[in-house]
Length: 339
Image (cartoon, rainbow, N blue to C red):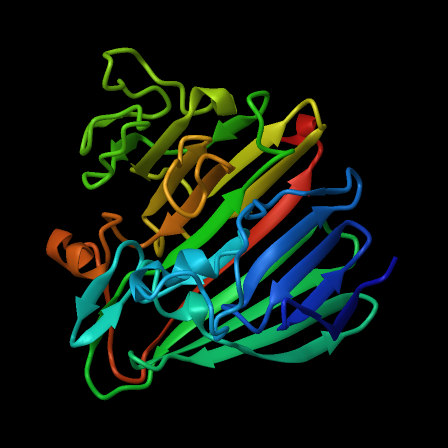
């Protein structure tokens, strides 16, 4: 099968772009965030990304379940992969701009333009400009024939006249059937630090605890193997930042499915990988224990408390007027013995 691209569909009233080749089918929500909501490996017929179990709604619908804007991200969260900027993490106000959880680009509508539509390569350019912050964003998503690899090139441009700080997160989340206790997580990093604000009764670590990857010490004094997802009935909900990256990639492989996925990213841009392990233990809204999810999320900054806190830790980035910052990521599926 050669490559093909279509913009003829909608999902929940949102414009959708579909890219395909012989190996992958990719769904993008141009109408919300440019989210990647499906990355289906055709050899195994598995969407490797997490699919949200709750009744998420399109932004702009009159009923979203909560008047609290800080909860909007979760009201409209379909799962998959979001491009999160300029606020990564909890609600935060910076330079007079209030943002909810992961607020900004992930809730905005994006314009989609097909820029390549040939048998050897398909590509779509997604663009948006934020309302509360002087950032213009561009996302070029492409597939080449004969490759089980999605390439995403993202850019942020400061269209204001003063420098502004930002935190930038690639919110990539995986779910069943790829995610399973039989799967193995590989990240070339040195440290795992429990988020200092994550005081969840189902967390295995004390807030702020630091240990060595892949087996930091848990709150009960025993080593926790972060390479092996726990079963859902253990009701775990962890949030950590993986640091001291040796290289910009990670891998999640399930030998029982003969399927793995590898993500590459520039480690000089994203110095951390957030580890969001909601293995049945996210018992608050909107999941109430229903999701079995592993987010492995390259990020510029810590902690998860939002941009203002990232500025306090000195990990927030700054972008000058007229300046563009970019990052290219790839996601590839592979057989288990190629992990």
